[in-house]
Amino acid sequence: MTQSFDHPLEITGTPPPMVSFRNVCKAYGSLVVLDNLNLDINAGEMVSIIGPSGSGKTTVLRMLMTLEQINGGVIYVDGKPLTHMPKHGKLVPANQRHLRQRRVDIGMCFQHFNLFPHMTALENCMEGPVQVLGMRKPEARARCEELLEMVGMIDKKDQHPSRLSGGQQQRVAIARALAMRPKVMLFDEVTSALDPEVIGEVTEVIRKLVSEHNLTMLMVTHQMGFARDISDRVCFFYGGKIEEQGPPSQIFGNPERERTQQFLSAVREAI
Amino acid sequence: MFDWKWDFVWEIMPRLLVATGNTLLAAGAGYAIAIVLGLVFALAQRGPSRLLAFVVRELVEFIRSTPLLLQVFFVFFVGPQFGIRLSPWTSGMIAIGLHYACYLSEVYRGGIESVPRGQWEASTALNMSTIQTYRRVIIPQAIPSSLTGMGNYLVGIFKDTPMLSVIGVAELVHTANAIGSEHYRFLEPLTLVGLIFLAISLPAAGLIRLLEGYVRRKLGM
Image 1 (spheres, rainbow over the protein chains, first blue to last red):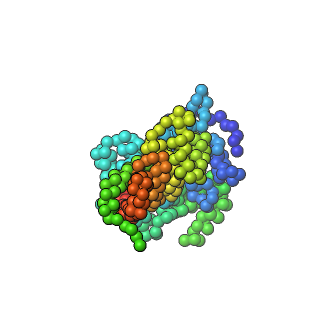
Image 2: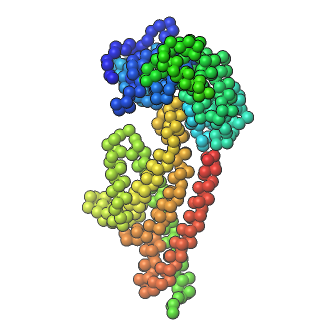
Image 3: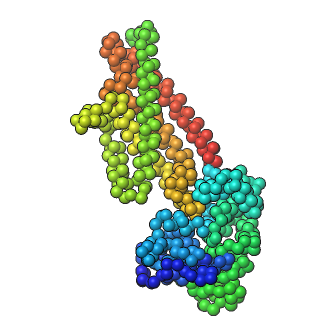
């Protein structure tokens, strides 16, 4: 599990990958969830992660958001270590302060939205900029109203989440994450908890992000058609490893590995 | 049958009303201490220090498992042996405030734990600090589910203020007792004290229920 690799203090390169997993391991007790993961994601790239449940897909995002501690390896964001910090020329596990400094580059949207129920849509979006970034309220309000406009929720900005549908809540959640101006956006099964008829309004927003913004995005999804349409690259996870990865045309059109073929045909049958 | 004397009632009423003020003051001040200290106890048990969490956990268990009367005696009579000489009021406020802080810390703990984990994760994703997360996200959501317990203990602390009579705090029961001893009549003062308690407890419980509904609506839940 905890093989010792020599990880650099910084990843150089012009430019360095926006996100870099190096020999990352994650286990819950004796259950190994991710086994020596190596994955680089370039700036502006849209990467989809697909695979059967229990394959470690969501864990990849949660580790990158620092919601889960890793048991081995190092995660770099924008060339600098996220899970570790340099000390006396070596990398040591990051403390809270380091995590707070480095986390600013990452934003995340969740399967169950996790909006703050005691705040309106606009207040949800303003919370991070005002409290964390120390932005002045009028400025934060302007930024957030612009984002709510972009996700088509400006007319509901003064509603509490309990008054919004799932699709509407998820769009507010996307605006809330974007309000922090992250370099990397993580989407963790953002349409899985939605009624079929509102999935489109959320995927539409993500499409817009892909075409209009130069964000780096990492998305776990069960919607194969959507992943095929918008991804630059698709990673198929199986048993805590990347079984196969490549452009969507290859993964969906001509997968090399048997497990990928089996998974995709099982998914297609389900539809 | 009853030898009820209205003259006597009117004569002692002013003293009982002053004592009612003292009872309300004792309950209010004790509750104020309990509300703040209880939150400190609840957060300490969830804080990063394992040792502190353990010590606070044991302290809360200890205080909840021993009688309030004993704690009142302890602060007032044992304190001076260690050079801590406190007035009846101060001792009483410390004892009752500490006692109810322990009960309230359990109420808060329940409230805090009832906030879904996703709220913590969303706060982390917004890069909020632990303190910001508690202050802005967790505690506002923990309050509605804590209100019922908090209201019950407000009435509870009010009804427990007579415990302070044993160390000479001039609250209702202490005053009624004093009146009774002076006039050799206990029927009127003690009955009146009972009625005063009833007259305050019942509307208070109703008001708390109204407040609960109001807070829930205010927080959009």
